[in-house]
Amino acid sequence: MQSPEQADSVRSPTPAQLVLLVILLLLLAVQSYLIESNQRHRTGDASVEDQLRAIISAKTAYFLQAEYPFVGTVANASDSKLPANTIRSLQNAAHLTHGVPAYRRLIIISYALHQPEWRAAIREIPHAIRIGQKLPLPQEMYFWQTVYNQPHIKLSQVPELTHLLAEMRLGWYSHLALETIYRKSGDKQQAASEHEAAVTDGMIIMRLSLFGLLGIISGSAVGFGVLIWFIIEIRRPPEARSRFWRWVVQQRSSVASRPAVSRLLYNTFILYLCIFALLRALLPFIISRSFKLNLQTSVRANVLLSVSLEILVPVVAGAYFITKGRAMGLRFADLGWTSRHPLGDIFCAGVLYWGLMPFILLAQAIAQYLLRGIPTPLHPLIGQLMANQSTLIALTLLLEASVLAPFVEELMFRGCLFGSLRQRMGVYWAIIISSAIFAGLHPQLPLGFISLFLIGCALAALYHVRSSLLASMSFHAINNAIVTLYLLAVVRP
Image 1 (tube, helix red, strand yellow):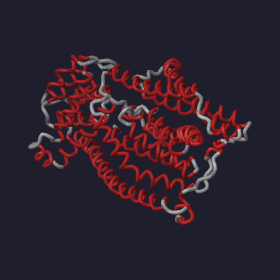
Image 2 (cartoon, rainbow, N blue to C red):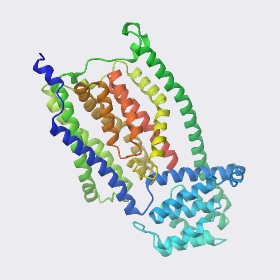
Image 3 (cartoon, rainbow, N blue to C red):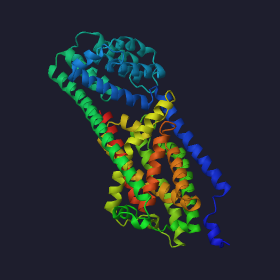
Image 4 (cartoon, rainbow, N blue to C red):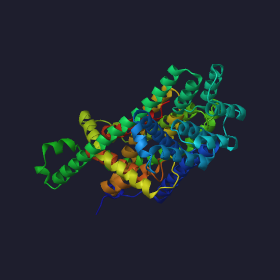
């Protein structure tokens, strides 16, 4: 017969704990979707996903037209030409939201790409939704009529026009509008400078695309190589496996094998979700009242909100863990905080990410095809980066994404949740369930679920194999840093 301790070690979560977990997951998923939908309704603008795709397409089309005119000439014979697709994308966003920001971008890029749609877009401005727009309609129409409908601009008008353009906060599109203003006013040097700035951003997009393609090709080779090596090694007897296998696999006994510790880890994660849901509902009200910042229009307010959540929530959950664990002689280091081979952890994380990247992108492409037409919120970080005009805020977001978020999420999802489930239901089910919860708590649903699930599985497997949170944190940090740096390169003004 099993001893009480052995029976307790495999006991499943109580029904009350399971119900609470399901309610929290649904609450956070719905909350994320409503935040994105509410933002779109209040601003009258296209979704962040639509804006991101449009600006990548616009920068690429403008660069190709400026640097390789023959490409545009050849493409004119095809219905799939890039300029036309770019304009169509912006038209869809404008017609969907009928908001002023989308029409502004449509006017600027269609004029720059020598497409006729800018005339109709100007006529739509007076009838478009003007929620949150500070620029009065007469000044708005004066700008568009002067810049685009008049063949020449007086030098005395340039300061006023540039001021109105700055009030619109159009980011990269401002380069194209300024080029038109300076060219029509006769300032060829300034026009050339703005043109060069716009083309440079397009060149960056093209280089990133080429670099990404090379990464996918090489990553596919690495990924299949690692998979074949793993299959060969796992089929061998343990004593016959290679020295490299023994270096990679650094498994050691887990403190979560103790039943009381397993319950503490599970309860810590539940508390983490409860505090997260509570503060996510209360902090916007506190920030708006205490700091006089509007979360709908202020990037600083959104950054303050996200950083506060990343700091306050784990502090509360960590205090609970330390208080309860002290009586058991338990410390955070016991969750895998220490590492036998730190450089090995980082190396394994980098190789696994490189090899897994093509599969993640393939999963994302499949999801986009299957879920086409379904509106999907993206991570709030993307919206903050797109609305950002400050280098300090950009660095803060980069540090949050590549340092703070991996630290907190690995501690909670892998250290606590996976560590508890692994003892209760075995390694494979623990990987699947913890990864599904990890993917479900991100706001990119339903589109991003499959790719996030794969990332979660890789993080849990890496933590299990290396017995170190440093390995999964390194993988998580590499992924977040690459995505954030790419977005900064794409959307920088």
